[in-house]
Image (cartoon, rainbow, N blue to C red; front, side, top):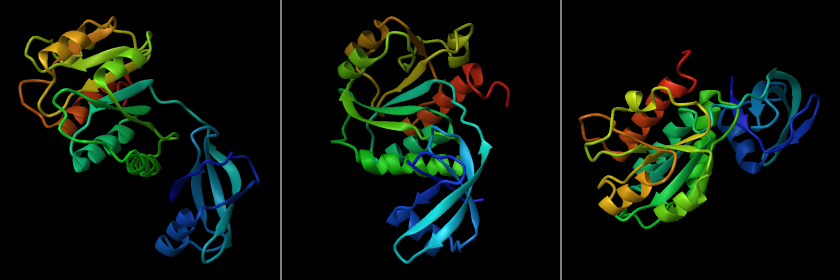
Length: 241
């Protein structure tokens, strides 16, 4: 069944006005008609079964029918990723959404060679991934900040899994063994890696756990997928999968 993300509050019997983009997608692309059913969610009120109430050329509306799944929060996991080229950054955001990250924080490091990021485009990719994977929320995409700015804003109670490929960090599963599963973040560097001064800065932060992703050199998008998967297997919702 088709799923779409909405910003409106959701409750039984509520009419929902669709945006022009949603109208085009549902009625012109997916060919839904009046009375057809779909699933809707907003990240707050769970997932609802809804019915097409009105079909127009440029606007349409739905009516909520019943709650199909109550709201549930994924593990409190964030991804902090250094900026890389557009297609690889889009892959990172898509896979972070698929793997349950609540937020993607974009970072500018000393060896970052990309000028910026289209945060609006990345947010749209996160929405699409959430719709397709069945999750009940959409990860937030934060605008790029410097590594120093990231560390200054990092919450004191949020541990950091620092993917440090300099060669002296333990493997992920060993490094996370016995750690609590509370708020965490995963930090991935650019394809050129972190500088020595950056490594010292990150490692000097209380709550940082430096780990290695293994003996092979990975591209940044591959490293992000591997790191999130390993964290979820050790402390997240893959433990019971």
